[in-house]
Image 1 (cartoon, one colour):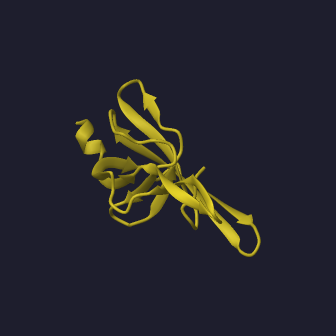
Image 2 (spheres, one colour):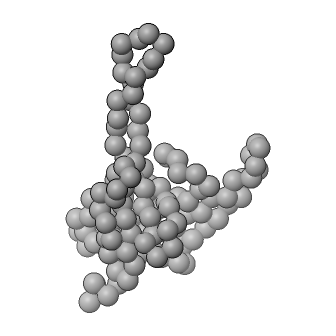
Length: 121
């Protein structure tokens, strides 16, 4: 029953810290964050909602920025975190996850943000 609701698949990439040398003769390291090349969760059953899409066009320099917000539903227990990269397996479109919400231990609801570039929220 509920398995039929999850009619899409997505790949989830967690945001991981890495140590980066500061350079300029300093011994200290700095922390940079990035997504791994391989997905942490591959072909996760999910549902991309279509009626909740919203778009905004922002005038910025040097170019305009198109931002799309979309809702994603996942089975309860899926390891998704804020700022994870979510890739739609059907289209290859990349999104950034906002704060996941556990809905009554039934499913997880996440708002996704799509911008021209992958960026942390």
